Image (cartoon, rainbow over all chains, first blue to last red; front, top):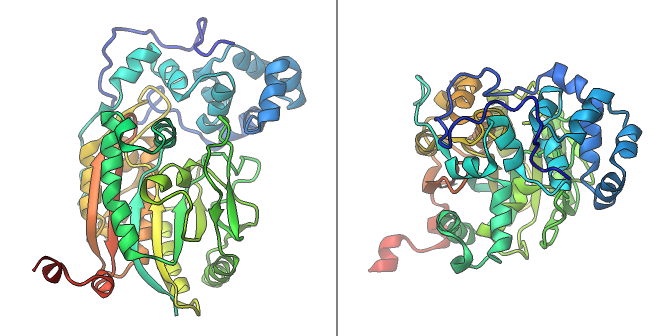
Length: 142
Length: 295
């Protein structure tokens, strides 16, 4: 079971071991908004992922992933992303981070696996870089 | 009639629970980063014990651990005599269920709906790290005080406005004061401080923003509410939107309530802090004034 994708097409270039401070714009890929359209596109994907909140479902999924996904009616292209644990593409396809985290948990992974894939770096590099501190304040902050 | 004696704002995170379990809740087993959180929480624990509330109203956000996206409530209230723990995908932690008090849940639901807050009523609510992660740091896991949980949507756009969450606090205060018991109620709001846990900005934290928030919330609520949510998200990460839950706590207290204690640290990914406030005279009624204690 891959917890860190090795062939993920959507992972940005890893770059150096040091991570820059995060930017303060709210555009992708820095911030992946869970928009209402994404919520609709990811409806069955999220229903599947949230089913993994029970131990018996986690076991059933891991025993036969294809069959389990088919039961939830997850579209073929999203089933493929699940099979590859392509965390970033799963979020872009409408998976909510908190739902996709259940898939990572069932796969023996954690939030850092998703984060490292989103950032495009090694999990260890991200763990060392966190917290990625910035210190700006909103202009009208009291 | 019941009385609002004070409030607590406190952050939550899954790691908080993981680290507590790893350390078995024992100070010397925490590493330095989480030891700082543990130590900071000792101040909250002490004040919580001194304030000695008989009921807690806890405003929190669920992280798709109980609710799901097929039906997502904007504001939900747990009504029952107990609330179990939700399985977040990693299995259950070794902690007892939370005690509730159905008469408080029924009363607050009636009051809030009568005052135009159309609450979703959850009779079988399971609760996630939104409450279970910080609670053992400030209270022993026998959970001596019953609570009424109120869940706020921080998952699905559109989120309730900051103004609405402030108004919820005003309505809660009136609802608590209309309860025909002599309960001493503490209003707790929990939401992460600066953090972002997805996208290229994963791991963003902003200690300066968090500290300013802790300093200004007691006296500058309206200015903080007026600051667009997008600005909190820009400088504090997507999940800093959860700071708006703290507005509910502040608004549930009187203008004269004052800060007793606050602290902040960034253990790992999430800015973590707490603020304890009390209504004037509440502590003095419980304890002799500090001068008398030391003289």
